[in-house]
Each structure stands twice: as structure tokens, then as C-alpha cells.
Image 1 (cartoon, rainbow, N blue to C red):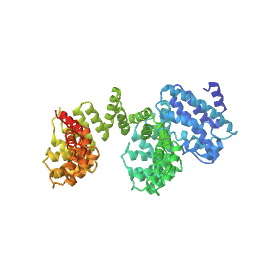
Image 2 (image 1 turned 60 degrees about the vertical axis):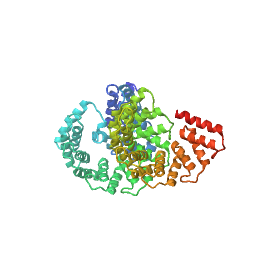
Image 3 (image 1 turned 30 degrees about the vertical axis):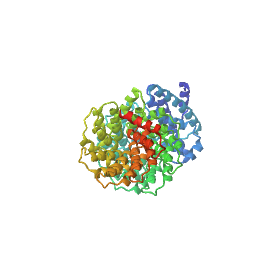
Image 4 (image 1 turned 90 degrees about the vertical axis):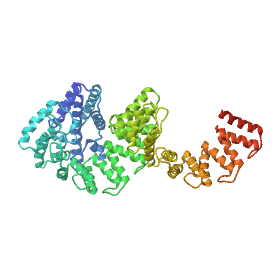
Length: 639
């Protein structure tokens, strides 16, 4: 780490014209141990001074309204300055100020940043010519205090804010619009004074009347949210427009968003796109992201997944987490870009590291499936846990399912914990799986409670399960009316098992009057979905002529389908039909074939009939030994 003597020599070498940089650098060094987060904030301002001064002089443009990352992504600029450790510094500072790292790590990083910053500053000072002044654009982060949109990311010492309040109040009362705006910022965020939105609105309004675009924007935010002033989205739009016309990028973005959603103004995607484009010109990454959505959906602009991807990429490279996530999604789907789970995983990871919960969830799914990244359930659980702890219900549910599949006692406890959290947030499937978990644990009444929560939200499996539970078991009496209710509800979603169970109740008159017509209708719906029991039952209705004209051909059709798919009773029934010539010509050879299939699976009557065929030599060569064997097996089962 840099020693005090080197730091002192550097500070003394900085020209008087650049004293703001010297003071900020000194402050950053002073707080590395006592307040590392504050040290990082001050380091960020020092970096900003250097980058913005260089940009203004090299590019002959004012970059004060653009983010540092946007300036450093300008290839023409970087080719001229070859920016040494600027990227590293920026990434270190941004990462550590957005994380809840422990104090030890903060201190080490703050010292590391100072070390790099001293090296960068020394390089910068050597570039200066005698008498060269600091460009005004370099002081934007100091002169404007801190923009309202990013104010909460900074955390100066309390006495710094209290002093700021004192001096800003004096200047504000004298009509200084910048002081009025900055005083509004302090009241807005409760820095140096007790938080007071009403006071913030008062000072913002005074500055806004003097056409301060930052104040117009900030007052618009308060009107939109209804903080300290009556909520008035129309007034917010008017203020955003005033600030947007003068070039305020945050106002341009917010105005675009109001047009996008039809809030305070009539919805107009074309206008939304117009203001997003203006904000983009000044490096607003959120506008890039939102305009990307408009291109994706073809709203206000001609639909183009390619342009959508380009905008997402531009914002993603500038560090916008939402854009990184969206770009990952496009790669996963192959929309506007090459389909690549590997690229999707890279962008999801970038966003996930910035605590983007959807990205954390999607990254976890890729780790779970091994798509685009090496399969790793531990990594999947890690990212799911991060998202779940941030309230992502799908992540909570997925964690519950993963733990549910594990057999340890702790895993089951974890499954219960996460499914409970997801279910409590009205995740429908979580309610169902939680109910099933309780059912497996023998907690019948609790299981029903959660299954009902899913069932009333049209979860077909939950409805079906409630119907099955209502049929009763050795410990619970049946409630056929309740079973009928839930089976009928589940059948509305064309659930084959529910249709079959409903058909049984209609056929047997349980919970509802007997209706063979309804039973036949339900069986047919399930049978057409290849439900074997339903095919068998439907065939039997035609075989016996229940509720319809006896029709052996139709019976044969359905029973044959079930038999061919391995339905034991259907195999025996089909053998009987071949043996008796019902719905088909009598064919003892076919009968023997189906009797044998059922007999081998232990069907007592099939064993008996097969034995009789061997005894008589019908469909098979007469064989008393085989006849005795099958008849004996049938008798032994009967005993």
C-alpha cells in the first residue's frame, strides 16, 4: 500500500488549479480505516474529476451528464488516453459500494483503491501542462453536490452534511437556485437534517421556478410518488418535460417511461421512444434498456429483435444489470442474436453479480440443467438462495423442490421452509407441493389447508388430490359430495384422471345420481387422452349396454386400446371377447394370446381360462401338463 510520504509528495505536486482533486484524494486516504465506504465514495469522485477533465479536453465535449462507464466505453477517447487502471478502479468502487461487505474487506479494498488512485493521479498530473486549468465539467459531481437519482449511493460523514445544510440554507434564502436544489436533495434524503419531503418539495419548487432542470426533475419525482406534495402524475409529466427539453437525461428517461405506460399522459409509444432516444444520447442506460423493449415488442418503432439486442448490449456493456439480464434472455431464446446458452450464462452472471434476482434465478436454472455451463447443483442452490432471500418466489419454490428430492432430515426441513415462503406469497404450485409434503408427513388436515389454497386458484392437480382425499381411506370416512365437487372442478381443465374419477362417481351414483350418459362422456374424454382405466371402463359400458345400446364393436375398440397398453383387466376382457366372438370373429388363438398375457401377471380368471384352452386344445396344442399348471395356479390363488 502507498505510504504517507509518497501521498504527501503527490498532493504537493498537484497544481493549485487542481486543488479540488488534491482535497478529495486526501479525504479518500484519510477515511480508509475509520470509514472505508466513505473513502470509496471520495475515491470515486477523484476518479470522476480525472476522467471528466480528460474527456472534456481530449474530445472537446462536455461529458458531465454522462456516466463514467459511458465515457470510458468511447473508443475514440480511450485510444487517446490509454486509461491505465481506470476500469479497474471504477469496477472495484462500484462493486464494493453496492455490496454489504464486512468492514475488514471494505478496508482492504479502500486501501487498494487508494494505491491504484495514487498511481493514476501521478500519471494524470504528469500530463498537465504549466498553467493548465481544470475543466469545469470535471467538477460536476462536486458543484451539483450529488444528483438526486444517485444520491443514496453516497455516504459522507455526518458533519459534512450538516455543514452543507448550513451553507446551502444561507445561499438558498438569497435565491441561489443551485443551493435551493441541493438543499432540497438534503431534505429529500434526510442528510444533515431530518428527512422531510415537504421541505424538499418547497426548495425544489423554488429552484424549478428558476428553470433549474435538476430541480424540475426532482420535483417531478415527488409529484409522481406523492411525497411531501399531493400526488399528481400529470404535473410530474409537465415538470419532466420542462427538464427534458433543456437536456436533463433523467427527466427524458422518466418522461419516456410515462408515455410508455400511459401515466400522467396519454399512452404513446412513439413519444416514449423519442424521449428514450434523447436520454440515450447522454448515456442513460435505463433508456437504452427500455427502448430495447420497445423494439422487442414493436411498440412505437418497427419491431426488430436485432435492434433490441443492440440496445441491450450497449447498456449491458455500460453495466446496466437489467440490460445484461435481457441480453441473456435473448441469447437463451436466440432472438436477434445467436442462440447460445453459454452467452446467456455469461450475461446472467454479470447481472446476478449486481443482485439482479431474475438473473440469479435464470443462472441457477442453467447450472441445474447444465445448459451453457457445467452442471453444478451446489452453484444452482447458491444462486437460488440469493434470489430467494430477496423474495423471488420462483426461486423459493425451486429451492423447495430441490430440497424435497433429497432424503436427509435437514433437506426436508429446508424444503418445508422454502415452500412455505413461496406459498405464503401465493405461489400456486408451491401451495400444492407444500400440501403434498405435509400429506407425506401424515399431516392430513394441514395438507388439505394448503391444497385448497392452490385448488381455489385453479391448480388442477390440487383439485384432483382433494377429490382423491375425499374418497376416504382406512382412517378417514369418504365424502363423495366433496370428491364430486373437486373432480368436476379439475375436469374443467381437461385433466384425464379427474375425468376418469368423475366418470366412476356418475356410474356408481356416489355423490351424485347415477348417470351412465355422463359417465360415458367423462370416460371418453379421459380415454381420448390415453387414460387406460377410462378406456377399459368405457369399453365395459358398451359391452354391457349401460346407458347406451349394447355395442361389442365399440367395446372391443376401447378395451383393445387399453389391453395393448398393458391394462391387466382389459387384457382378460379382450381375451373373453375373442373367445366368445363378441365384436369380432371368434378366434381362440387370439384369446389364448391375451389370456396368457394376463395369466402371467397373476390374473386368476385368465389362468383358469388358459388352462381350459390347453385342456380342450382350443387355440393352442392340447397339453394336459400346461392345462394342469395354469388351473393349479388359478385354484391356489382362489384358496
